[in-house]
Image (cartoon, rainbow, N blue to C red; front, side, top):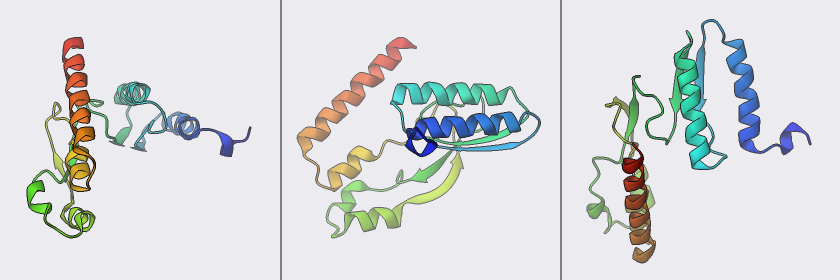
Length: 153
């Protein structure tokens, strides 16, 4: 089985291992959506443990991720995204996707360490016409997961 046949996460892990070994002294390591090819729990664990590992080294590391809380005690930036958007005002627009794309704010802003990654998928899905019953159930699953995490902390 050649490298092209390996799952995405395996290929990324092999490449990352080489990068880490070559950056034992000083270096810059850029990581974009690590572990997106695996399940979310393992992806979070791998990403968090990698940031812990790199924080003990003299490298500079930059991560882009959808995981909350993988860099405690470090600088944390987020894309502003659609945070300031009035989703209700978009509902009457002809091309929702075009309007969202035009309004996406890609500027980075420094944020508190405890601030969660923005959760905009449900309002966007609602605008795009996904059944309300599905969205309400998704919201319920998010609430349950949030309560589970609070209980485990």
